[in-house]
Length: 125
Image (cartoon, rainbow, N blue to C red):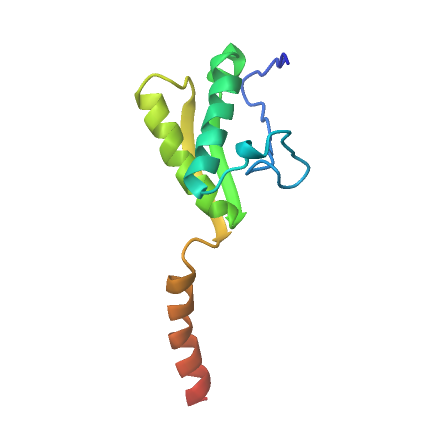
């Protein structure tokens, strides 16, 4: 599949891959391709970025920002680290601008412990 783009300064490309594979509208013919961890899902996304950016000079000139919410925050954070390592190793040709997480479900245990302040305030009222 050839990706044709004519990005100029100021253009924005929004790209929403279904991840991990076999979620959303994505599917696999080989069930062995279904991942079992967040790290494997991030590795798949990093491989996708390598395929897209390394083969397209227009994309290489643009800056990548990774955004996610809810459970996708785990993937975004892990993908950001994976992408940065690949960039530093010369395996990925892109400019990473940043990673933004909105209402991300990163650590359920830490999240539950924040309720203490809320509950004590409600109890006092």
